[in-house]
Image (cartoon, rainbow, N blue to C red; front, side):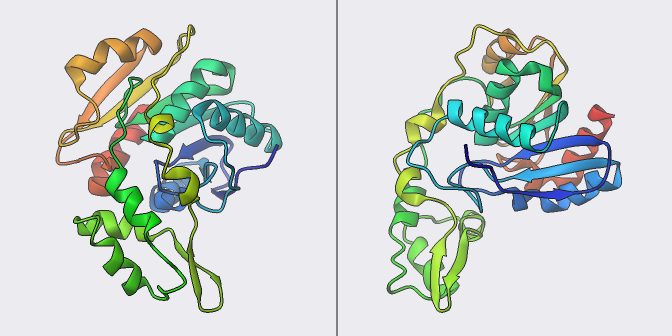
Length: 257
């Protein structure tokens, strides 16, 4: 099995693994990783399959991403860790914690619920798939093309972090857009397990986000994670860690101890 790429920051004894969201990469979390390293953690910024610098595959599911993470932990001789996941990474983390609870000491889920989510990235995926790098040879050109599909400036900047020089004068995307553009159902898949994670869990919710509703999602969350605590971060949407970094970090550190 191929090994996921990661950027490991810090020399602490306690491992903390971070799983990014859909169309993201581990490096989106670098600032928080550096701050966590100061607190004594060894932070693994992991790129999930078809994202960042990790391998590409036509096969894409949470079941496979769970096994990718298991292989990663085995390779790095990690027998216990704090596991944090945002959005898609949160779904991977939940699935992993339920299947391999013995490897997870604490679980932090950022703005995602165990329930099913209907595909909702269609315009973004169409925009990314429309980038023809036979003709686009600059970041400005890529942004201009993407703006026809993605109105929000901040979202475009996030997506354009996937741009890189494949070779001299030739741009490309780090994400495997040919696979991910058809992955809506796989990304939205509900947790389906007969197991329960009995250890401490923290669900961080963006007050301005529509991904998690504390009232309607609460029962689903505690059915799998009975010790779950839920905290709402004011002034934050789906990207809590980027929109309210200090509030996010303060809550995280006070909870993990």
